[in-house]
Image 1 (cartoon, rainbow, N blue to C red):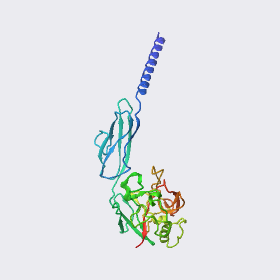
Image 2 (image 1 turned 30 degrees about the vertical axis):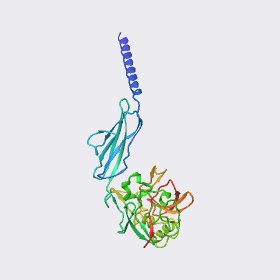
Image 3 (image 1 turned 60 degrees about the vertical axis):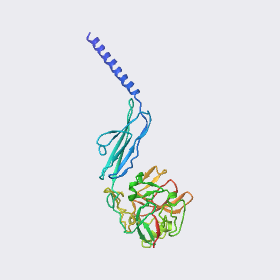
Image 4 (image 1 turned 180 degrees about the vertical axis):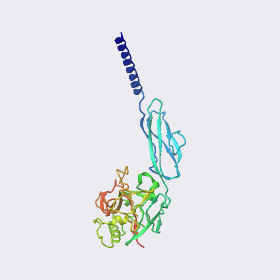
Length: 337
């Protein structure tokens, strides 16, 4: 009798287990996922204290989607709305905000964006560059640029940030005063190739300035090396160290440390490691490791020259890339007056 009772009890448990399992499977099968992915735009870098409006979207089915916003640093409580206006913290730091898409009977899905606040005032978030005391104002947009005289030319001492072409670093225009913009060669030069001292095309530069030619670059190197450099194709050993600045963003050192490049910035040229863009500005590469700057002299019908500084080398080598599809920084020049 005892054995029969145990068998009956075990059978009952088995039936109950199967029933519960089936119920869970049925619940899983009857609760589908939302179609699409949550989207909203917020750059990686944002001006501290700014007010921004965010709009969630991206879910294509069903139609009765409810979006909710969560952020311990931006919102006192969750907010159920597709569009939300928030005040960015008035302090330097890293924060996040999450948008959640919900619909009854469906699994919810979400997106979280982490961003860093910056202060664009001089020597606030961005530190370590040298100021020459000489500047010009681009009449097209009111941007002011420091410049230095090296050799026979005046050189921008910061990267061009004209927004009529190119792309902001990681799509964050607030970084213009720090990093400028990244341009394809065609955008930088207007598709015009050139050679000769101070003979480059205006391209994206302000009136009276031009995109440097190979000869302009050689003039820079000759002055920095005390006349030792006379060829564009040379590696320019030691000049990358002299042309790059030991810069900090929110007190974080940008150039990756290397004993082979101390970033002495002897001439105030202020080279920074912005990196480059690829695939029509869909990817940003080599931030904190490389700086790239175009020459207006073309190598071929599809490629053009640029110079670069690498964090682990003291040199300032040259290379070439596609005239369209590769984004680099631009320094404008003019014949010294």
